[in-house]
Length: 96
Image (cartoon, rainbow, N blue to C red):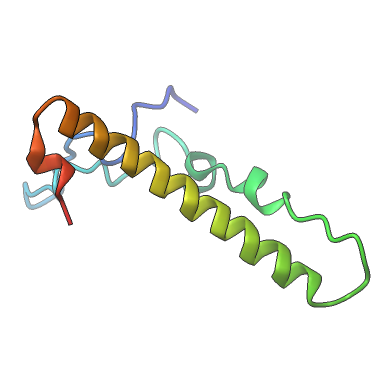
């Protein structure tokens, strides 16, 4: 596998066969890494360890792990918005 070249939304545009790109997103990772590698799916999908035989425990674990990931994203966005306000670059702080 070759060296990873960054986030698909980093602005490293890939031209498709028609010469278009999609918002500067890298769309083809076939030469760099797999989708699962990029997202760390092995780690995420192996992070559920029910402690009881109850069928619903897996639902409980996945739901709460998902909530924690959403909270992590919210904090990431809040930090970025606060930095934009602090630097007086308001358009990025108010994107929807």
